[in-house]
Each structure stands twice: as C-alpha cells, then as structure tokens.
Length: 351
Image: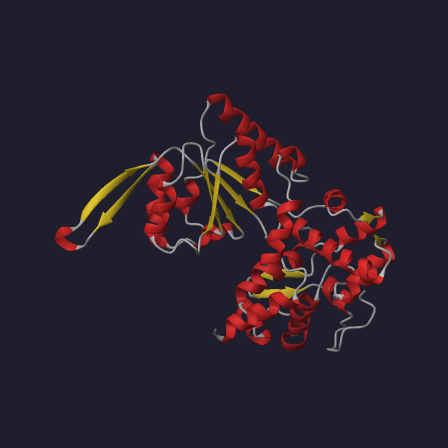
C-alpha cells in the first residue's frame, strides 16, 4: 500500500462526518433507508417528477428511461435507485464505475439482466473509456457488440439484451463525457438538505433505532449534519452510543452537544479535517488564493479527498470560494476560526 492510500485511509478513520461509507455504515444504513418514494424525505421537486416518470412508464408497460443522479455524496442517490426498483417492481443489480474494469465484466452483467431490470452504476464518471464505448449501444439499442480474438482472426459477436434501465450516480457530473451524458433521458441533481427535512429524517431514524430523542436535540444534530442525511444518521448513531454509555439512554440537547464535542464536531458541523484545511490555507497561503494540489500536498492528502469530501460543504456555507487563481478563504471562515489579519492559532470556543 503506497503513502497516498495510507493517508486516505487514516483520514476516513479520523473524519466522523465523512460522506464516504464504511462497511459498518452500509449494513446499518440499509435499515434506515426508505424503500418507498412516499417515505423519501426532502428533494420534493425531484420526487414529484420521478413519480410522474415512473407512473407513465408503468402505464406504457415499458422500462423507465435511463436515469442520471448527480450531487455530493450522502444525499440519497443510492436510496433513490433502490426506491425506483421497488416502485417499478423490478430487480436491481448494483455495481460501480471502478469495479467494471474490462468490457467482459460489463457484458456479463448486461446479459444477466431480465426485461425491466435496473442496473445501478455508482460513480459512473469513473468508467474506463473502453468500457464506456461498449455501454453506448447497450443504452440506445439494447445490444452490445463484442470483438473476439485479434488480427485476421477477429470476429464480432452481437448480443441482444433485454430492455433495462441504467441508473447512473455521480458526485462529479462535470467529468462525464458528453456522449454518455446525452444517452440519459432523465436527469436529476440532488441538493444539500435543509434543517427541517433533516429533523424529519433524524426523528424517523431514531424511531427505527428505538431511541428517544427531543425535538431540540434532533434540530441540533441536523444543524451539524452538513446538509447530508448520511451524516445525520451517522451522528445520530454516535450520540446514541454516547447516551447509552454516559447518559440515561435518552437523547437531549445537552447530550448532543457533549457527544459531538467529544468527536470534534463544532456548531457549524466542521470536524478536524475541515479545520485542518482552513488552518493550512490561512497559515501557509495567507488564506489564498491557492490551488487544490498545493492544499493537498501541504496536508499530505489526496486532492480527490478534499474535492469530494471537504470542499462542497465549505463552499455551501460560504467558508470557501473559487476564483480563477484558486481557492480562497472568506471572511466568514476567518471569523469562525478566530483568525485576524495576522496569523495566529484559532480561538477556543468553537463548540
């Protein structure tokens, strides 16, 4: 394992509010994820339009058109894919862009799909160019051409596929090639959730987990959840652990503040990694502008870790801005961290 891989793994262990799922999170989230569109909270316009598309497809007795879901991690793209399969009464096959490394892998998956089945490809922007070329005719004409052997012995075999629906999920829609993007009939972008919707999600999850939670406590967790249901559920589970060991088993406002403080999550939802990025930009680059590669090198992190996990939320809350010359801290970020015009350590009292 090289240095960058070790660094990335250590970051994910340290970052409790990371939007990347661990194996434990996957198992726990299965029970918390909604199975019906009526149980899906938030993203109202998306839900309404998706409901119309599915109902129309059912009336025509046709598979749903190919769907592209984009947005930051942890907002419900995987949940929506499973909801679509449940609502359409079909089977779903799940994979990811990096997992399909060869055209043969794709052929094997596609030929095993039944009529109306759903193929869900997470991180679809990470498909290799070779595999992507094979997926075009599969999406358009439900057929795929495979070349066997090489040179003068090369032969092309055509596989006819049963009509299926491809659902692609991506955190970086800008990296999708134009030919692939144009083959999707339905586009939906998921935005960060507002506090009232997150409160409903936390309350629902607490009921499923059989834990008592006060309204003020649910609201406090939602404010620190970075606009992400995945993070909200993760923080809820960490607070649940805290009250079951150090409290009376009920989640109140004071318990939430104590539990999240112990995990290094401040009132804005920033954790240790977020603060390291902000502090590095201030101390090493006078607040910017600075390129993402320079920030990553200073922190000994991978640029993708910062781009996918840290940056979207800092941009959302107005702590970071992008300029033609690079990333730059805003006055709001400096005030939150306690920075003045001169460099100094952040003040206490962030929690």
